[in-house]
Length: 148
Image 1: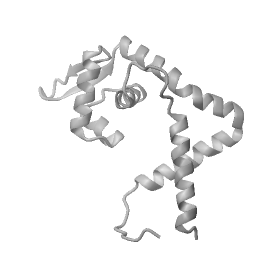
Image 2: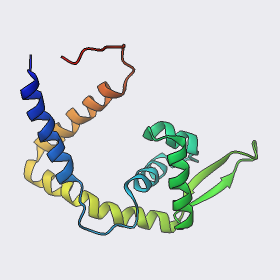
Image 3: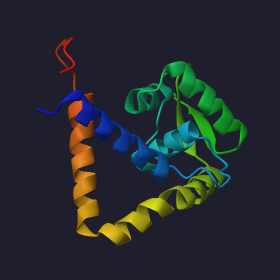
Image 4: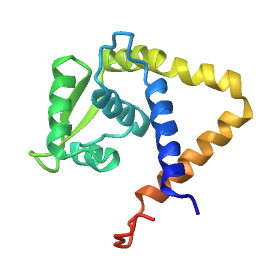
């Protein structure tokens, strides 16, 4: 079993990795939350709703609403009312939204591509393990008060 000092070292290594992977020096048009919402809308391809985006991202509905308002004001998204319910609408990217997403992600993903070139197949294994860890950490847990 890993003791708390070793786990603390691992924690700090993961924090450093996350900081290095997030490129901060280049000016980006979108905030991280806006980028995440646009990415989900792009990947989903079918009419996303604010509720869907809240569920898939884990963001609170109010935060999603604020981001969507900003994205709408930036011209990145459009709203389409649903015929079945006047209060409900779906969201889609505009051409400007797709361009903003592409430009920002070229900046953001450069570090990942650099790491991929250096690590090769080990990078793919790292990504597989991160995906597995995300699945484990996001599935419902039994109530446990124990840390160790």
